[in-house]
Image (cartoon, rainbow, N blue to C red; front, side):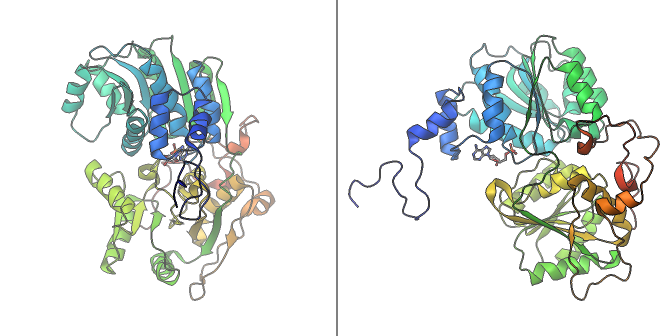
Length: 460
Ligand code: AMP
């Protein structure tokens, strides 16, 4: 059709018309972002800022500290990366062995992912970026830092190694981002964070992102942030509405069999499966591979290169089933995954929210299926209390358990109040979202679920 293809005209696909370029630019531009960033966003197909971006970007550009409650999938990375990149582009380049902005993340995978996003967003800016994490040789990292880096994404342990070896100085840091701060504490990085803070200048901008807000996170924010703007984008403890969640009661010894059955019966194409232990992950991979199903695992015992390969193959569709432990899966970003299966329930209830956040993203619908055996009832109770609703149960014909899964949910928990566990072990166990506004005193881990680290892998 002659002359019919101006921006904004109805596309050939019959889908909604594309937005006119001027409007795309206006939307992100109205937040104060500069042209080189708008150009990158346009190329990436980001048309409208997400709620967290709408709130965070102008505040960060204005130099404010930020305390944001946001999960993976909300667009939080762009929420901090875009304004940080813009601010960096406005100043002097980093001198040798110095960095100007530091993004601390809990895992190597997240470091890679956040760095990849920063590179994409900053493609048209003269801002140097780099990622440094453990599990790989430190020498190339030391060499790269010699030239100075404007924006460094790092895991706390490796950053401190580099700092102690004088490969990086921290006194020039203008901006600090703590991404997934709850998980960093959960992984036991509190001491490392304290050391990093001691080495940073007092005068700086600090942004803290966390999916959950424990007492520990709040006291960290209180001590390290200056009059932060608080942002919360998703309702507390809520999970994305488009996700259909249910539990399938099953005997522990029949979980693999049930999973294989459902995989075939429902014709699942790509599934992310969460297991409790590394050993459990390897065993399930072996079982699936024995059935000629392309499966791979990511967990802490696998070398970084193997983890990345597994993730890339899964994203490319070559691997059909990716089996992950919670720590390894944290922060991985896989678009529009239709199914997430909890082969084992998480020991820490909040991880349930993180896990199922991998499905039903960006408006796409998804399913989160939990295979639950009788001795996981306390973990199920903890999850249901956190969700403030019971998980629907659906038995799979032929797999009805011999060992019934006891009644759970808030009602069952209220009927049998349990005393909180005594010691919490000191390490940053993620707090109770339920207790976000109320003093946490007297609130224990609901349903008697053991704290992270205290839970012994059972029978796997
Ligand atoms: P995050 O919550 O930062 O892990 O981002 C989740 C996903 O959303 C990533 O794949 C981003 O590339 C994507 N994303 C972030 N912001 C936008 C946006 N404004 N429009 C479209 N996609 C976005």
